[in-house]
Amino acid sequence: MSTTLQVVVDGMFRQGRHNLAVNLVAENGQPLPCWQPGAHIDVHLREGLVRQYSLTGQSDNTRHYQICIARDQQSRGGSRYVHEMLRPGQVLRISPPRNLFPMQPAGKVILMAAGIGITPLYAMAEALEAAGVPFVLHYYVKQRGDEAFLPELSKPFQHGFCEIWHSSEGRSPRSHAPAELLDPAEDTHLYLCGPAGFMSHIRATAIRHGWQEQHIHTEAFKPLTAVAAQGEAGFTVTLASTGQQWPVAPGQTIATVLLENGVDVPLSCEMGMCGACLTRVTEGEIDHRDTVQSAAEKSAPEQYIALCCSRSLSRNLVIEL
Image (cartoon, rainbow, N blue to C red):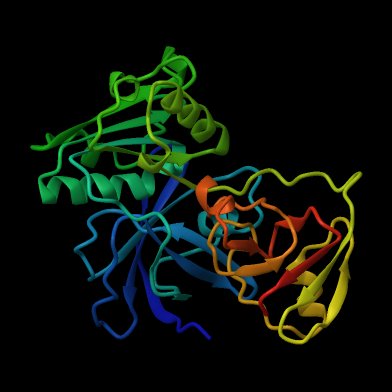
């Protein structure tokens, strides 16, 4: 069972037209665990409402954590709760930081963010500046006034710079490709964070211009749109340890079926974004629907399935539980 930390909401700050930054400090006044850019935490907003948010700002600061949440009109509860209910002084439980989006050693780094995808990339920019690694940050928002961390990103950097682009002024990601994206270098890495469509487009553009797959790193802050259950086939899930089998009907998740039958499943985001429920598959073909594994991992000889969202293309799926 993972350990949670008790924190207090120490402050809330407007970040652009639609975002709220939230500062969290340890309830006992002690430093919080160290973290690296790309890390996220689980935030227990209330009973049964747990959401994952990227840590942002300067990663060498353990006196407080900062997260930033956009107001989402399609919110499943987390965004709405933060913007309408959360208050300074409120005590929350959080997980220790986990990092599924770590930075790799590089001679130069290109960061590209859209919307609230800026949160992990802003932390990366600060870390790269501190380490003296050359970088460029391209940040896309709909219009002026939507930017988060505008004063921080507008300051002069010694080792890089930030460009902010506004779709309302004709600089959307689909109509504007930065020069750095079109001219890959051997020791340069590219980090993307934003909506799935944004990352898919930028990745395709990068590959078309000669970027190597292993130099492109992505993190989604929203789940992929769920595939409709119409025409979806059921299958059987089998536990390798006991041989127990249960049917998984169309529209059901493997995690739901296992929990209903008394099998403990480590769940967190329940959207295929965090990797908490990744489980090794010993037999069967996976229909991968998570966003946490890379394309290389999804085609590797040793296969892992996200029990919360992925399914099976074969009639039987044997998992290592």
